[in-house]
Length: 338
Ligand code: KG4
Ligand code: ZN
Image 1 (cartoon, rainbow, N blue to C red):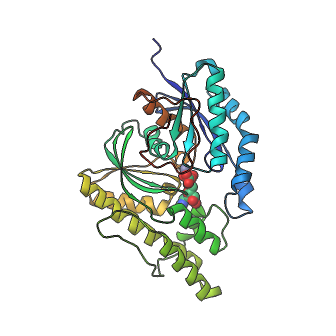
Image 2: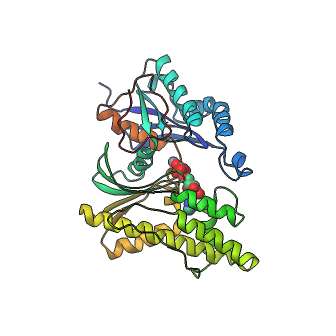
Image 3: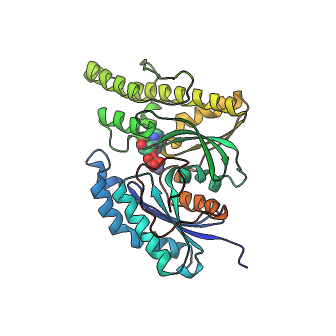
């Protein structure tokens, strides 16, 4: 019997068309990402219909390139997988339909993957030794979750955002101060030149590890309007990052205490943020935490993370039927729909 499991994974939930070939959940043989950032930049954010059309244009080449780079043909693939939610429905449908058709046409099994579970799994690629249980803080453009990863396919949500996702707050604030989409990396860079001189609100909930970022976003918008040209942009970026990070890390520490674990992983686009990483490293040293971050390329959307999550789902016995539909508001922990 063949021992290795080779997964072809597709990701198209937002503005990246991606395909990756992953061996045994942790070894990436190829990782192709066609990003549409330059197309959506001029609109200040992702336009769903334009994203869908561009996924259609890109998907065939991206999949072919992933196979080529891995030096493989479809015959070498054991499992085809694709993100089926959450995300933009039209965008999800492109990768999901392509994946299902590919699996059907070459007699391979198919598995739909949860996008957020993919973000978590990105850590298994970078850290070959990482095993559950641990706490994972997922901070991306569309999601903010504090999760107890009990096992590779078992998740308990400890906290979630009640309004904006962290990355969404970064992107909205950056738009107000005139930075291009996506604003996160630009705020990250500018904040290094500033000091946290502006006082911004931080939201905490009693008896809950939930987040809320709409208050800080509104405070920044009001401040920009009030100060006009006098506003110090690097100081504002630094203050914004500090306030957001205080909230994230405070809840993260509480989650560790609650679950009695000192193992922590970060995931999602905002986990690329250098200030957040620096602060977490410091808090980690003070509190004896063992911290894991995905490599930068696996923080933002990619298909390698989907291939990793698919592997762990597959060996846990999960399978999807070919009538699996895209689920734009899929929650973490929702069972795969047949
Ligand atoms: O995970 P991701 O690619 O997409 C979703 O699944 O939502 O995350 C994209 C988000 C964007 O909001 C972007 O501004 C943010 O991640 N981001 C960052 C950084 N790099 C990307 N935010 C802060 N600092 C960064 N260095
Ligand atoms: Zn994502």
